Every structure is written in C-alpha cells, then in structure tokens.
Length: 99
Image (cartoon, rainbow, N blue to C red; front, side, top):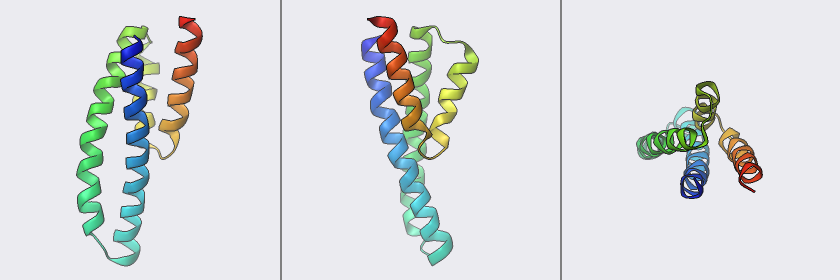
C-alpha cells in the first residue's frame, strides 16, 4: 500500500496545482478574452485528473475504503484546494493505521 499511497500523493498535488492553473486560465478566458490558456491547461488537467481517479481507486481498494469515502476523495480533485486537504487526511490516516 505504501507505493499506492506515494502515487496518490504525487497526483493529488499535481491535480491540485493543475486545477488552480485551470481556474486562472478560465479567469483569463472570461475576464480578459484570452482563450489560449484554457485551451492548453484544460486538456492537460483533464488527462491528469483521469490518472488521479485511477490511482485513487487503486488506493481505496488497497486501503479497503467504503465506496462513499472513495467517491468523496475522487471528488476532491474537482474543488480548488480540496485535493491538498484530502491528501493530508489520507496520508495521516494511512500512516497512523500502518504504524
């Protein structure tokens, strides 16, 4: 489970930063009529989010999480800053349970 947790943590941070970049790109698109940023950041974030979903499900299966908990952690990658909070809680929980 240690490897699954490490992969999840890396993608949680990447997806969190990517989502913040996407929010900034959308602000540029809407407020300043600059669509090129969201045209680049959007698909990259979408691709990385799919990887985040796969790695989160993998970790959830290994940690034997209930489906609701897994679903909430999956959704954490869709709300700015929440993926960082979820990552800290998951890491703390699994570190306490492992040691």
